[in-house]
Image (tube, rainbow, N blue to C red; front, side, top):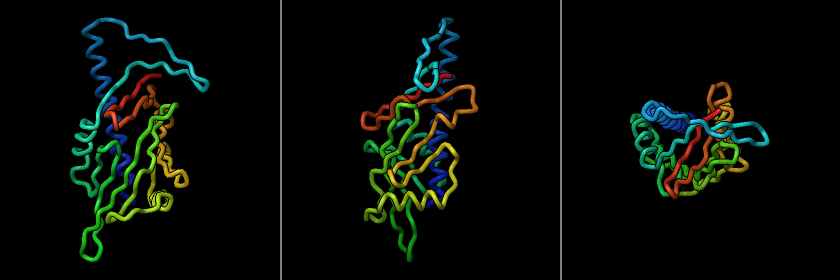
Length: 189
């Protein structure tokens, strides 16, 4: 299970990349048809300047379609439902299959990063303590530098600012509101 957590987070990042690439293609296609300019005023923050180029928007159904296609042959399922991001798997123990569910509530932070806040961890319907589960995940799995697990706060932070550090373009999460079925990312420099 702990080995699959890294794979699951990678698939989540892949979903974000697919959304961004689709938005870039759509933006270029509309630019060619309109023949207009897409310049916007740069936004200045205390830390750095960020000039947004375009915004991409998606919903839970689209994310679930991508996750289902990517996780088709995996032991764990990733789903967005009931306003939560869920990792669902099963463990075989003494000839019986035991359900495991990790539920997170995602939030877009002011700096454009995404934080997954622990909502519920359970095995066979019994609750598990968040700090201990996240400590095991952190110690038993390798994650890229831009994924930070904080067991004390019961969070996983996806540092999009570190992920896109060497890239020409930067991705920021503007809004991740699963209860309203609204996920918005901004691409810029």
